[in-house]
Length: 383
Image (cartoon, rainbow, N blue to C red):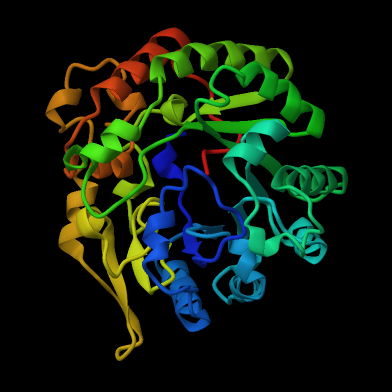
């Protein structure tokens, strides 16, 4: 089904992180703020509001830092949701994590989480180069690298799943380091027991101005999307032969038709609660106080005095109106109902406009759709 059908309540739990990823899209943003974590009362109020206004009972933990760094907060939010009188017994839990956590965390995940997406860039040489451990955490993990810790945790969770309703998959950032090693990564993940993988081409970090106005950022960015597509197609078919799913962010809507690209266009059905008490429509907009050119995605805020969320319905209407059936440059595209105008977060970050366009990505999506075509519903939607 189209990605916008993934209805859920997301918690951007904390800005704390135990890795120093070389391509982190929000690291500089986090450097300019004090560490922040969602207050428990705001998180519980979000559960109350969401469960009163939506049928979905799916909750999700995500960045901007590493959610397991606030393990107790994550545990308490999960307990509150699962014990909620409004069908809390139907709650399912998803987490996107860097996988670098201690034993009591993985034991809790085993028994309380249903979908675990490990941010995992492949073989140890790539993982350690792209996602090195923060030196402040080296003693906690007895000098191990992020790759060693992550690999151990992945294997332990998969080996101990038993009859639990738990899926452990990988969410891979593709950079110059692994763009041509995708088949090799298929074999590597298969050897660990991972059967579901989503790959994402590295994208521009979020700054204070859109990329179109940032000459330095444009000069420093280097990624051959055409090379990625060619290698992805080979890896996709190779993975099929091994009984694995090898997905791409460029194909997240190939399993259904929709004029929307993703949940950014349906913010009331898939809100993201930020550490500073705002409601964001997009994974790329993780703090609400100073969103700069990404402000179209900040569509609500917790009002401490009124003890309720206040929504900006004009922004919500603008997001809901962003459809490939209405965007001029999408009108003659054969993939417009299997793309939805491409990622809205990347589009606004790059162009500063809700109706902006990245022609290189349009070409890549059309090529993939021409070669791979529409498909059956994905077993697990992109995180």
